[in-house]
Amino acid sequence: MNVGLLSPGEMGSAVASTLREYGATVRTCLEGRSARTRDLAARDRLEVSPTLADLVLASDFILSIVPPASALEVARGVAAALRATGARPIYVDCNAVAPSTVRAVAATVGCEVVDVGIIGSPPRGQGTTRFYASGPQAEHLDLPGLDVRPIGQEIGTASALKMCYAALTKGFTALATELLVAAQLLGVNDELAKELADSQAQHHATMARQIPRMPSVAHRWIGEMEEIAKTFAELGLTPRILEGAADLYRFAASTAVGAERPETRDMRRGLDETIEALARAAEEPAGTR
Image (cartoon, rainbow, N blue to C red; front, side, top):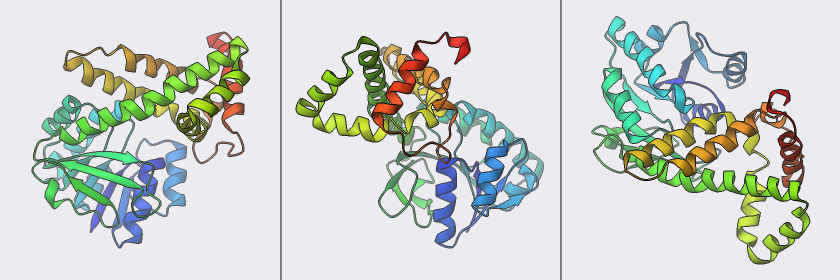
């Protein structure tokens, strides 16, 4: 099996490693990509196609795993490559986008499309990550080593599931971060920590697990929150809750800890140190962070 990957970020690199471990050939195209993406591709020993046209010609599947705000732009680039070459891989949109956005991708790209919503952390072993798939070709999506779960024939169904799930998980992380930063600034952080440990132990444990990592991926989560807000607005529900989450992630991304990336972040920094860093940043003028 030949898989084209766009692009090898944290999730994409982990997906590529799993596919390669189970015998697939994984290629990427680095035209216009950042130095970090090039470094990740080299680290993971991905084969590199010189152009997007070469990549689509060599691939059975094209996996798009990019920041949500880039999903439609990437689809347009692939569509141009398909028109130029006549290649017809299956395009697998794995991005955290609204159902209406993935339907726009499907209308743009010019080949068969599978809508995939990824739930879970980057795959590091069996059972850690679910790839919910929908669309006419979902039943035929066979990605070796990955837990692919078809859930219907409609493009947009898998993305709908992803939007609802991430509203809880990343929405909770945004709310928890903001309230803990507020408690730090208000001088009640120790008392709040004790109360949470006593009465909200499970939530407190989730905060301790998720928040230290969050700043390094906050730049990606802004667009995801905006896509969830769009999903809810299109249903006649308020988008404002998730727009607020996007604001929180925008703030976190603007800080010193937000300049780190998952592979470079300080793994020794725990919950308390992360909140202290964000609280210091909150006290600074926005333009000086």
